[in-house]
Length: 83
Length: 150
Image (cartoon, rainbow over all chains, first blue to last red; front, side, top):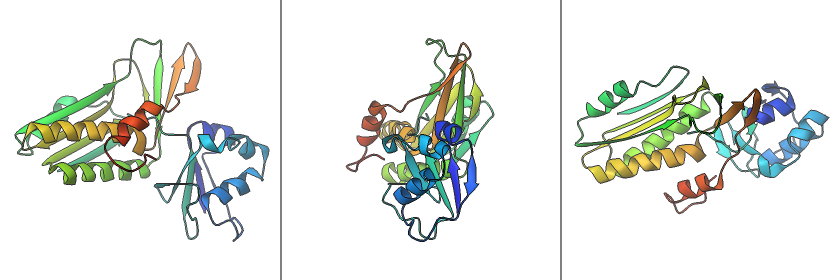
């Protein structure tokens, strides 16, 4: 599974994207964020305040309880500020 | 006709308007958003989520077309660095009559602000900061639906 980061999340994680293989019990966006945060300080710091994060699964905005089973791509980013 | 463009090039408003006016409508409404010159920002940079951005804008354009019976919808959003006075975004709606064109145009820009994955970063005097999302934008988007904004 590919995980993408944008804006200050990208800067704090220190990566624009990475390929990861979470264990099968990591089945939701929330569980994926927890699992990534447990891996190193950069992820933990970027994900410290879940209220400041938004997510998309395969390009579609989702909530934290959304399933990631079978997903190819999950994106984690701040609230959007376009227009 | 639905036209969605996300790119680095400056927005040619005359060309965009001309396309909408060829859609055979009696009314065309447009909105353009500019980089504000009055708050000391030297450079505004727009980041986006390639692929997902275009899909989100096309979904919005389709929703507007169906809801207001539009003959044409154009959404152009610039990304990359830009300076004060430059156009960031252009939306336009072509409809048989003005009410539909005006309402659809407002819907498109209100919902674009909450539904499309863009992020603004401002640089002032060498200091860069990411722009925070505003609750007023959520409220503006929410007035177009009974559902809760994302």
